[in-house]
Image (tube, rainbow, N blue to C red):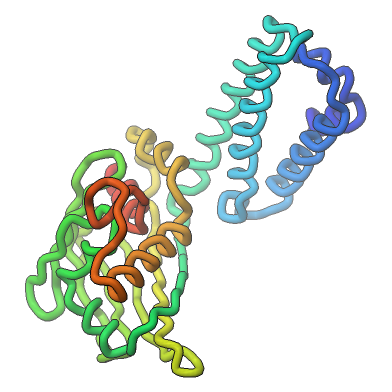
Length: 279
């Protein structure tokens, strides 16, 4: 917050101290961002969940980009820019670790939906046949039914390792709803549901997916897997991507790929789970 005040009220001094040309408006905007983040972190009881800690991580990325641009400008002091860049990079690492530490053990609740131009019965049957799920869920390699309720899942995480778990269906309402949860020995406990709701005006079916899971706490030895998730998507975005693939698969019979595979290059909701399991 002190840096924010300097950026707002003394932009010329701030520019001179880091060895770049004076950009009053830019420095004041950066200062306002720092004040907002600091105020949000200090006043929010659960800053990691509200996003304030992650806003600092994003701000650090912006600052590093701006410093990189400043190196190409005439009149810049590269020696001072180098020191400033190193300092911001160090702060970025600390901010990232702080945000990740505050995420540990906090429940994740995500909901996403999409309207598909098919009847609920068809969509329910496609989803209930669990072997279909790898067709549109990125990183899910296979789902093998054990019996009518239990199944064995194999996933490939974004960091290249394989994760397996068993799951059980806890609710099965034909053409309406399927709910599941992992068994007790699963590496990462999670539960979810998918609902098939007739859209208004006979315009297909609203497919709504809900996921709940708690990232395990206290295992910082494999922090790299968490850091990798920064460059991925938020759970809601991952769910949305998978739902779009489901829509494409159910309506056309295939999913457009960027890597020669049905899942393509995007990360899925399963990525969040497999990343946590590999910690």
